[in-house]
Amino acid sequence: MSANTPNLSALIWAVADLLRGDFKPHEYGRVILPFTVLRRLDCVLEPSKDAVLRVLQEHKGASDAIIDPFARRATGQNFYNRSPLTLKKILGDQDHVHSNLLGYINGFSRELRGIFTRFDFATVLDRLSKANLLYLVLERFTTIDLHPDTVSNYEMGLVFEELLRKFSEMSNETAGEHFTPREVIRLMVELLFVEDDQALRATGTVRTLYDPTAGTGGMLSVAEEYLRSLNPNARLTLYGQELNDESYAICKADMLVKGQDIEHIVPGNTLSDDGHKGKHFDYLLSNPPFGVEWKKVEREVRAEHERLGFQGRFGPGLPRVSDGSLLFLLHLLSKMRKPEEGGSRMGIVLNGSPLFTGNAGSGESEIRRYLLENDWVEGIVALPTDMFFNTGISTYVWILSNRKPEHRRGQVQLIDASGLFQKMRKSLGSKRKELSPEQIQEITRAFGSFQELKQAVVLDAQGKELERVTLWEGTSTPTPPEDGKIKVVPFSRIFRNQDFGFRVLTIERPTGDEQGNIVLGERGKLKGKPIPDSNLRDTETIPLDADWREYFEKEVKPHVPDAWVNEEKRDPKDGKVGVVGYEIPFNRHFYVYEPPRPLEEIDRDLEQSFERIRTMMQELGI
Image (cartoon, rainbow, N blue to C red; front, top):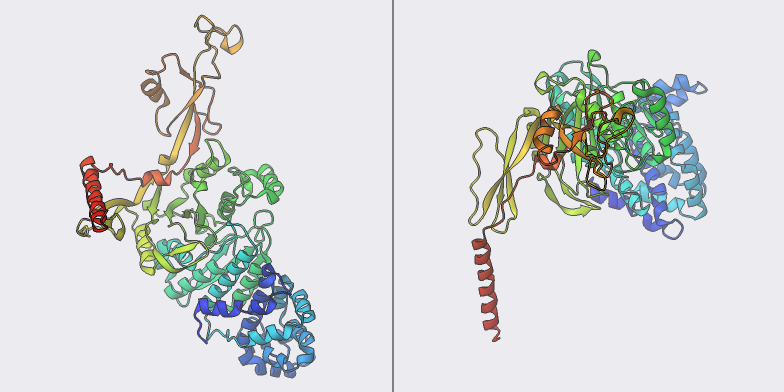
């Protein structure tokens, strides 16, 4: 059977035809997902079944502690099954399929039994048995070969994600509940490792990688595969946490087949219950839910923020409850190794909101301030829209590090890769675009080069994009087609950290009486001074490193002579006049002004259109 992922996913999902009527559509995944995991494990263990049974016979009556190492050695895996049965053998006894299947699952080593408990598989089997469907479903799955020689770990990961996507669609889950396309993960991994390429190729390389929103383990798997491609002898120990039971169970099973320690994959909500408390990692990756509120864990998060401050994870501030993306970013920061211990690098996918949401002094602005003033942001890459399965919104890959190379210190690189994509032949949900390996390489090269770059966009006569060429040193600008043109746009830009900062001044104006005279205060601090009119109060936003007095005298005073700056409105951290804020207006930095077309050109096009219409009317005899 072909291991072509879409065909294989469709073949597995076709089991749903058997379930119609007895199970609701949103329940199909509860049957299909655990059976897919079960069949994968059965295929992995089937070749070593006889060897395991010999081990059990040789150590009959011995404890699990004694049997375990011998049984694992027999399978060549970190797991085994004590049952003499396989799924195909279970089909041979139609009257006892239910009991034999339960016995087979209980024959797995402890780690795997826990995975099926997460699926609540015993309840699923009971329902299938009562509906007289258990034999039919098991029979269908035994016809599918999921052995790693037929379906690689990478392909199996794609199959699980496609099945989960279908499950999510039928369950009407929100746009924030999504899976990361593998090419996006590949880009993140390459950006994460680009500064460490030589170190990762060294003999005896051992690193750790952590994903607090692990899903089915896609990011962990791609990172491990990429490191192995750089250095076959390297060892990447994987850690993760996942909230969704089905995703957690699949991730754990996938890690087990890969030979990872599945005790490193823990269940639960990362924000309210850190499953790896006190641990720190070399690399960190995450794709947290976009725009999903954190109200369910608000009590625990606020308590940690108020009780522990910067000794906890959320010291810099809290974002609005409607979007918890920045909480995951802060959580990842807390998992970085100290710079003196080697430091860490991290990559996280976020929507546009964390770039600019929140006024000066807000939780979001204070988090951005914390990141930039500590010089942790290496770069941000804008991805194309329509890249994710359940949402078409704009997304951005943030790369952060507390061990920046010397040439990057004090600076942030922005890359606009929103125009780098190829259209998919067939859409998958909201996903209509994908990154080619060449485009991933181009983005990674631009990031690694750390230089300002432009791209030449070749347009035809109708303005349709034909080609996009990065103008590296020595690269010639392409020649436009007839009646077409070339548009040069920024691709990579470098900014100082402070370029994203600003200061908000409060501008006061005096209260006037009915005769237009300025009203003066009669006591306290305002005695003899103009009383500010709250209705006329305004603010001015100035660059962070600007002199506020000079700015006021030059930009405000000439237009409003009676105005003054309220010097009591100071930043609580640096004590200076004006409240500090930070934002990263990504689109503004890549905006290219296009002047309107000349009137003569518009008139010429209109005349040509009218001429075509007149010709058509004459041909029709009108």
